[in-house]
Length: 188
Image (cartoon, rainbow, N blue to C red; front, side):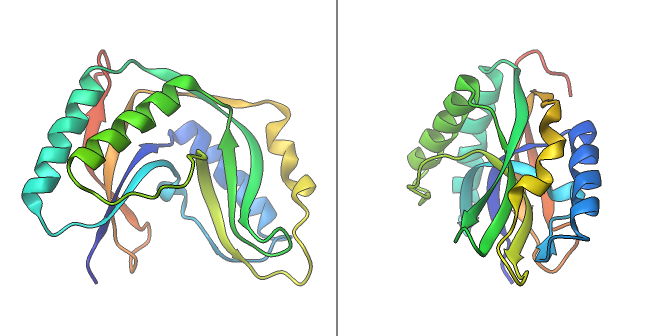
């Protein structure tokens, strides 16, 4: 199976720990076909799919490095829970982040770089989120209000970089970090 690639913001350990603890509690009450591995939490900026042309990937990485070098760290706050798909039987359960101009600017710059390298991208509007579960299989509709306690205190974290990931569907965790694009001033 050919690996696919995507560009995303990695979620730091302190937020990953909170989300993972929450998912472990909710798995008892919420029946999803699969729960995302804690090391696979991320916010997707662009999904690239399968890449045959290594030179095109190298050119994209040069453009992404330039974006990183000209970006500054910013904060995001995990602030709400939601779903994609039918309300009664969602296909994706996710945590969202508060609106943030720096995040949207970064996503637009990444999208522009991908388009310049002739990648086909998802045209749907950007809804930044961290996927935590897939394919609801419960008997009745999901009750999102049960999961809101995580947000009594919004969880804030610093974004200091973004990464290129490779997908390995038959492994756990499924996503491998291939390239790291730190923002200016970030030594990590």
